[in-house]
Image (tube, rainbow, N blue to C red; front, side, top):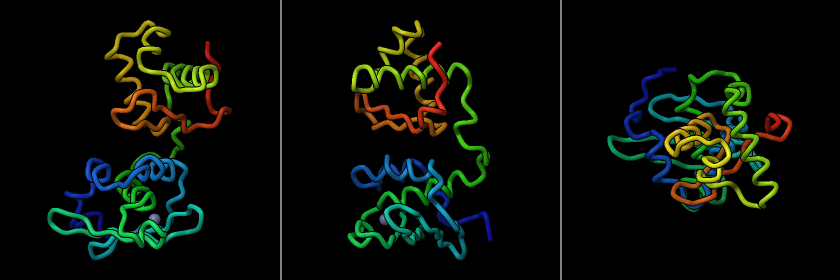
Length: 181
Ligand SMILES: [Zn+2]
């Protein structure tokens, strides 16, 4: 299996975000984090895998010089959408060399406190916190809070909708979130 895929220049996070339809980006990321992508392989410029959602769907992604082709055996895929399964397979490929440790084992103590705050704030207020709420609680500056939220997002601990206020959602179950000190 060659690591040098001919469409590496077009298969990246920004392209995935551009192609994904509706909630496919968020839900596909959750599938990736939940390790629902199986049997990923790439041969002759064609990336294939199976994504286990409601059922197990066969996904393929291939590419040319400036665009991607894709298919999925789910109903959205039959519709021609870049569905959540396509998103999950693409992310699994992009992140194939990342640590095998589950994300929950990799947050720092400070990140853990932010995760705990997001958990309790959401529970108490019935909506996720804004970054301003975190600035107030932690007495951190806006850039520090923003960097922290970005790091949590990159780490796969939270999901966000770009440019939407109060859209943070935790991807970790309660028992993997520390207490708020
Ligand atoms: Zn699909």
